[in-house]
Image (cartoon, rainbow, N blue to C red):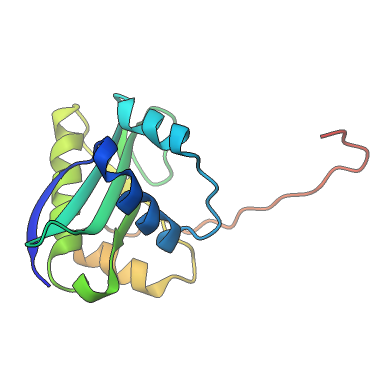
Length: 152
């Protein structure tokens, strides 16, 4: 499966974008309204990659983050929130094309850095990030404690 092109997502892409999002994030409960709002945000980017038949074969989501982003030295920072390529199109340059487009968008907004993250046990994502030129900056383990008597 070969890449035909990458472009910014719009409303006609909702069904294919949502299907791929669910493949990446099976527990996501985003509504159509939430995704439509995401398409309208100036500080957010949704890109889709297409094959020669016009089928969506991957997506990237990115944001501009103005808060501190672990491992970075500047602000704002472009942040690769999600990257997904359908299994049949992996290792064919689709992911790289999406990341390259995110990098351009990030640079156009005055950012000097593009950051991302991955679950600590997701070795495939770590390898992909390295292949795209990311360097690991730190590892973090998050903790939570449920508070007894909390009303919410």
